[in-house]
Length: 294
Image 1 (cartoon, one colour):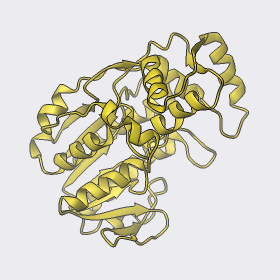
Image 2 (spheres, rainbow, N blue to C red):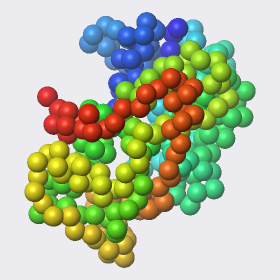
Image 3 (tube, rainbow, N blue to C red):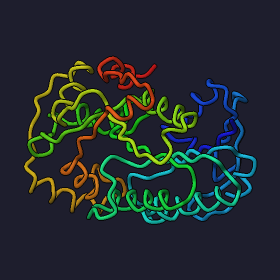
Image 4 (cartoon, helix red, strand yellow):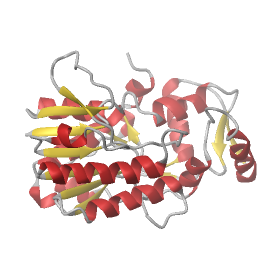
């Protein structure tokens, strides 16, 4: 199968492209700038999901599209509206024009068009576009994804543990998360392409165990062998900090990120596990290699 992957140069995209190549698929990565794979295992096409330029040409001759492009933070150049909603609309239109027969979409746990949180509301509106597209679609909703190169465990949590004299915890830290291995995420995406019964369905991609944020911070601290106490930062102080952080070019946390943390969803791992024959991996088995990659 010839598969075009948007966001192929990102964290999930790199892992998924490698998985699809290993499974025998012909993979085309979409990039705003032309590039050549150093390993020669995949090709690249030039295209921009936000503007729509080059998409029809990139999708010509493609059997399936996996749309991964998304952003966690807005910039002057990239907004949630432009990337999540406009980008999805452009990819769907180009896929329909090119006669693509299969579409798999990466959304996010908690996506809801009615959400007051910009990230989640635009993810939810993008899902609505997918459902109304007329294409044979499958929607995936992952929680936090663990893997080499992720931005949460190897970035945010690691920094919280290592950079300050203490380990700061948002409020009580009792916010539930079901992190999932990138291996399980890419397995689900790869198998969705070859499982017609998953068309027209939306799946939560979550791990086998629920943790609180505080528990994850303890796990990261202990895995790194760091000896520091955890100190709770009261929510009013966190909200004040977020308000002040917005003046920084690269704030440690944004208003949307705090809002998502305080209203995390639970997710149900069973439907995806059954549909894609997943045996979800425990994150403890992979955490050390993610935090201290070779």
